Amino acid sequence: MEKIWLKSYPDDVVATINPDRYQSLVEVFEESVARFPTQIAFTNMSHDMSYGALDKLSKDFAAYCQQTLKLKSGDRLAIMMPNLLQYPVVMFGALRAGLVVVNVNPLYTPRELEHQLNDSGAKAIVVLSNFAETVEKVIDNTRALEHVIVTNLGDNFPLIKRTVVNFAVKYIKKMVPSFHLPNAIKYLDVMSLGGQLTYEKPQVKGNDLAYLQYTGGTTGLAKGAMLTHRNMVANLEQASAAYGTQLIDGKETIVTALPLYHIFALTANCLLFMKFGARNLLITNPRDMPAFIKELSNIKFTAITGVNTLFNGLLNNPAFSSIDFSSLKLALGGGMAVQRAVANQWHKVTGVHLLEGYGLTECCPLVTVSPHNSKGFNGTIGLPCSSTEVRIMGDDGLEKGLGEPGELQVKGPQVMRGYYNQPEETAKVMDGDWFGTGDIATIDEAGFCKIVDRQKDMIIVSGFNVFPNEIEDVCAMHDGVLEVAAIGIPHEVCGEIVKIFVVKKDANLDEKSLKAHCKEQLTAYKVPKIIEFRAELPKTNVGKILRRLLREEEIAKLK
Image 1 (cartoon, one colour):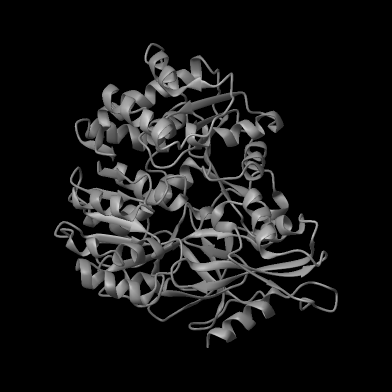
Image 2: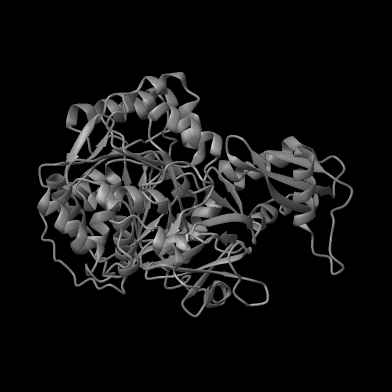
């Protein structure tokens, strides 16, 4: 397809970017800490960390990894924590040591964590003490894990605040379950010893892996998308092209409520705004809406990203409307579809349009984005970003015309190298340089793309991918389950929630026991919220359960 979207670009957005402008993310990072040493890089729980401090701390962590842990370039280091000051220290430190970062959702169950650690071959993990119990449960089953570093919530705060916060979290709020990891290393010891060691800068090249970012891909257990430094640098340049002309070096403050272990926040918040010397306001627990809004009211923020549910939650809290939005100039939604009602209300309350972007883990993630000069919500996912090609393909392998639905496929320097150690799964989504998103979309004469359906059965709960096969596999482990099918059904808060249809093997099986079983094996957002028992499930003539028919039944009920 001719690049018809270029004619809709704002005048200050370039058609192409240079994915080799920087040799690696390390080079981008080191440029920023050199340019903005006194600027605030991250703020968390009212404590600031400057770019200069981040430079030193990340270098100390890198030195410890190299000299004490003896980790080599290309080794994997997992990070299992929410948004804390320790995250950028560890993440940038790992990259500076030439390591590959494996981001881990701290809410993972032991089953999920064990799979990711073994699949990635992680040799070390840095975990918040609140979640160390999960590591303890799997450590004997991990093949490559040699080092566990445990940090406490307040470890990057000054001594008095650190002592108070860590005491309160452990003994008053009792948020740290007991764990036994006798060989674990304390984060504070790592940083103290690292400061006495010599950091040796490795040669990091564009084709070296930066992240193994786990995603469900097409089906089943999570797969590690291999994202190279060049992939990530390209996506940073693409995001910079789309919105960089609206940002002022050293003058921006971005609200980071989405977790940094998620590719959206990692790229759009942590990396992009670091490039411009911005301040990242890290929200550790955005579900505590009153505390979240209180933090927002104490800072003049210029940008915010989130998923539809986050924006909706803010708008439905009366205190949010009293915030001073005079500095706000960029609000970007992604991870799931932005609803028109939410976008309209956001503009009414803040005076700023809520723009929508679309991306995938396999694309670092940005693929399309609403232009910065958009005048309002239009129901599309915007235009392909710079140096990105898209095409709409039919089941017959032929490209569709304007307005005709088909699978959205992407080509560009941000597309992953493939799934780690999964050539068959990689082949399912790659056609030469083209990546098949699995989403059904259309493109109009102005180049705007619109998602109209999902080719795959993936469920999106508050921006997180949930895959039916995994839910069904876990449910089927229950002795009382004969057959099960999982689908997503629309939900006004979460976008979708998981519903399962179950045929009983044991007549005494009830909803309570099945949910309890799921809670032991699945992260909370994956646990089925609705269970319907049936005598039988619809199937094809070869016995394959037809999730599509079940989904259609549910949608019909809503009409």
